[in-house]
Length: 149
Image (cartoon, rainbow, N blue to C red):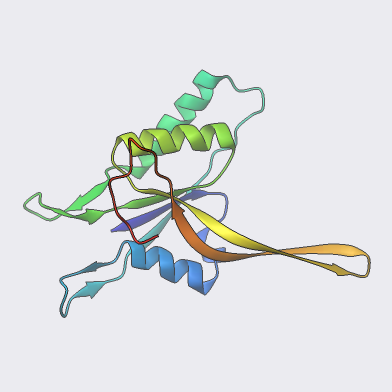
C-alpha cells in the first residue's frame, strides 16, 4: 500500500516518528506471520498563483489527483488488498479541491498535526514544529473508513 505525501515537505526531511506512522497506516498483514511496510510517495504540492481562477485551481487539482491513481492496490486476480492514503497540505483552495476529489474517489485523506514550540534566543524568535499525529479528513458524506487516527 502507498502513503501519498502531497505537500512541499518531502518525506526525506520528516522525523522518524512521522515516517513510521505513515508507513504503518498503509502496512499490510495477514494477521499472523506476514507483514509488509507501506511505501511513502512524494508528490510536490503545486505552486498556485494568487491570480489563478477557480477553474485553473480545479484543473491543477485534477492533475494532482491523476498522479495519485487508485484508492486500492489489487492482487493479480483483481482483489482489493487495502487502501492507499493521501496526505494533502498546501495552498488552501487547491488543497480543498484535491481533498474533495479524493474523498469522492473513496481515498482516506489525512493532514499532519504538529505542536508548535516557540523560543526566544538573543532577541530572535525560534519556531520548531514537532509531528504529533495524522488526522483524517471526514465529512458526513465521507466518514466510511474507520482508520485508527
